[in-house]
Image 1 (tube, one colour):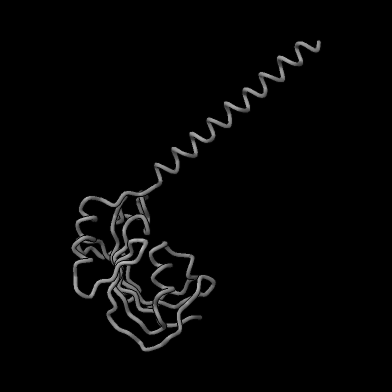
Image 2: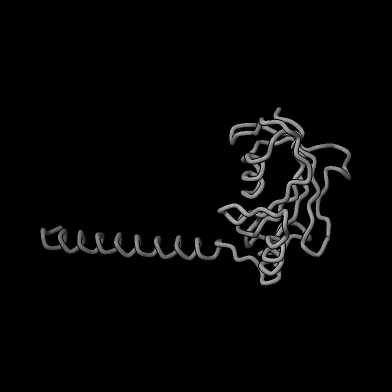
Length: 166
C-alpha cells in the first residue's frame, strides 16, 4: 500500500470511529430517556393528595411516608446491612400484589437489593418502626412491567415493618 492509500484509510478509520462514538452516545441517550420513568397521571394525583395528609412526610427524592408505629430505637440499617422486614405491597387502587404477612414469614434481604424507594425508607427507619410508604415509579420499577399487577409508571404503596438488622 502507498503512503496516500494509508493516509486515506487512516482518515476513513478515524471518521468511522467518530461516527461510531456518536451512534453510541445516541443509543445510550435514547436508552436513558426511555428508562427514565414517568409516574402515571393517576399516580401523580394520588401522590399529591397523599402529601397533603397531616401526618405525611416527603423526602427530597419524592418518597412519601407516614410513621404508623415508632419503636423508640435509634438503630437504623445502613446500605451494607441485611434486614428482616414484614411488609404488604399494594397499588393505589388497593390491589395487593405481595405480602410477607400472608406468607406468614418476614423477608430477609440486603438494604440495596430492593427498589430505590425501599432502600431510602429502610435507612431512615429504626428497628421496630412500622411505616406506610408511597413510592413514585421513579423510585420503584419505573417503566418496567413487574408481574401481573405492577404496570409501567405505577405508584406503589407498602406497609413496612423493620423487624431487625441481621
